[in-house]
Image (cartoon, rainbow, N blue to C red; front, side, top):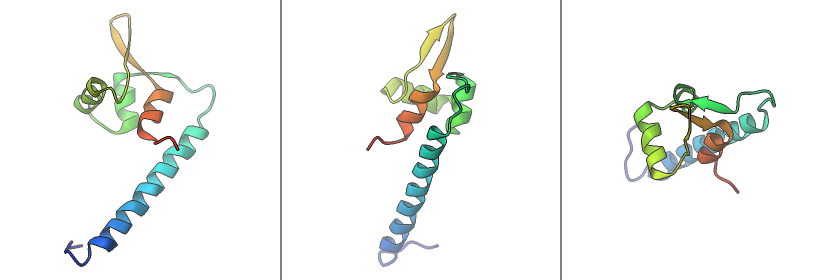
Length: 90
């Protein structure tokens, strides 16, 4: 779809609808998380969960968007904190 000045409101409405659907899906996934699910994630698992690369995760960590925990010379991330960092709190 070609975006012009006249079609911008329609395009924006589509984007906002898709954003709401994504946020709802993440929220449902967070609420449906099994209690036995692993809480600490490795760097690779966190990247896979967020569908981002290591550099992006490192940048988010540096900016304080996500928090890493050091244990035995490795970094781990809490699943709950990862999900909270991408799902806005109402």
